[in-house]
Length: 227
Image 1 (cartoon, rainbow, N blue to C red):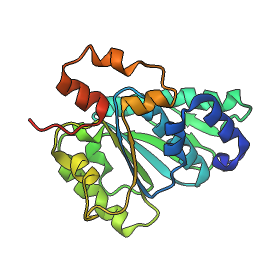
Image 2: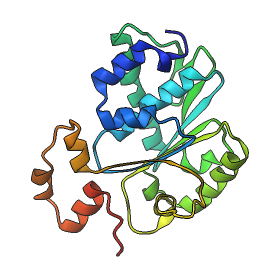
Image 3: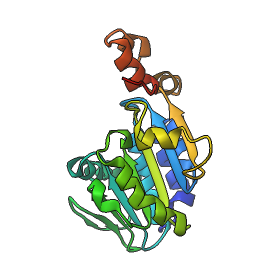
């Protein structure tokens, strides 16, 4: 399979076997900046892990940084990558991993996937993945450390996914950006109803009955709610 797994039938087999259509659409979107407004618990974290693997395999010496609400959560994302390495082996495409620890997944082409604390992403190049960005503390100062690099380095990619958390903060500002102040973004929105319609195995109405309306709208229906 080599390093260009994204261009092989083996990657397509993984997509067909393990990813739902909205996850595939996300992974296949090659926009330099991508943002996803999503429901809770619909598998989008798994989609960003597949994307991280393919980005690292496709480009030598390319670092992919997994950043979440805490360093512990970022390391948990890296741990979950093991399942996707196994998935490629299941379809006959063992990946060229040379090192896999709690803090790095490195390939023979010298690309790496690394978890990082939020504040450590300043001035990084490569691909920066910001998981659940709406819930980050100091999100504005962290964004100020990332955006100038992306504005001056066309090879850098920024990937953001989050459930909404109030009608304020950088995630809300970037998503609702009619003047394009934060650049052009590939945009994806998947609420629980859309996920269910594309094969996610839940009954949204049964879940809705368990929650107050404000929690339901924010956590599952992609609504930015004010206080």
